[in-house]
Image 1 (cartoon, rainbow, N blue to C red):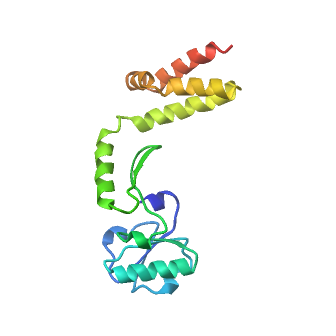
Image 2 (tube, rainbow, N blue to C red):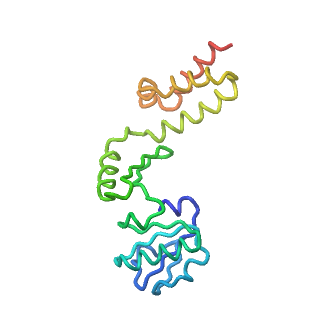
Image 3 (cartoon, rainbow, N blue to C red):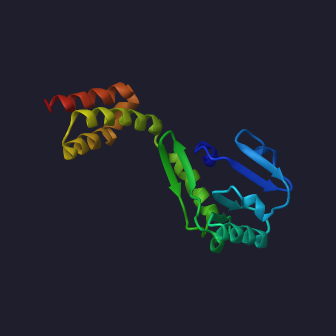
Length: 179
């Protein structure tokens, strides 16, 4: 899902492919793996239940200077994929360097349950304020002071009770002292 959200063209190659992969943005090639499947690849995930095949896929990818990750085989990874949870533009990623993906997933799920409510919407409101503050305040240190003040827990509480208007009112009061 994250690759699709980034605009990647995703291709899944396997003799049997779960119906969940059959969707817009995903090309499903129902076939046994061949090195030629990597011809247009920019990034490769080797996710079979065969460790030797995963290692071969990674070797083939590396031979073509393509970054590759063999799930559950840290030695066959050029990168690790973190477990991610998001609420709008607020993204929390947890990784274990490939040592314990299951733990990363459990930590992600636990953190997702404890993310503050509407935190993504709060980030959106702060982004709108940031644009205004950047346009009106030339001094970077002063901009930082104002933006930090807008992002604190009191402003979050004000946002929860009054929405984006509460944050904008606080920003306007801070900017009024700049005139």
